[in-house]
Image 1 (cartoon, one colour):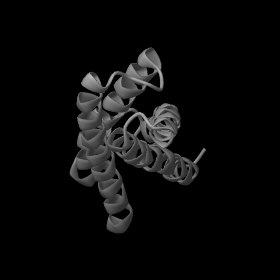
Image 2: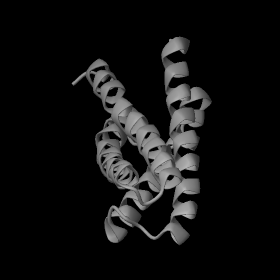
Image 3: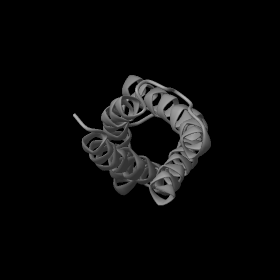
Image 4: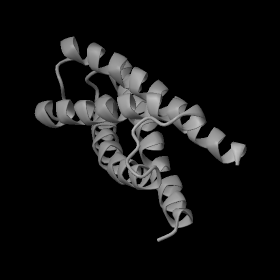
Length: 140
């Protein structure tokens, strides 16, 4: 298969984890602010599922990216910048999804602030990875 095929697959697959991570963070932050009211619980449930699906959606993005780069993990130039953000974002997404699965939709408020901080960091990392991925397209 030509690299154009994998470029299209990678481009399509990357949008899901980016959008779902940002949505998960927004749902969880608002749900945390609202508290233990029904809408807060619903927002936390939406944040839970968005994080799980975002982490699962990052797998095809990573696999297609590795196929495109022929297994080169860092590279140089814009690819290197993309990977410097993508790999930590991927690791953090998997860790956050694992944490949410282990604690369920209603995690204790005392530990949830640390989780929210990590989600904001993950959202920043995945957004930066997306930016540098877009820069690679512009550079062509």
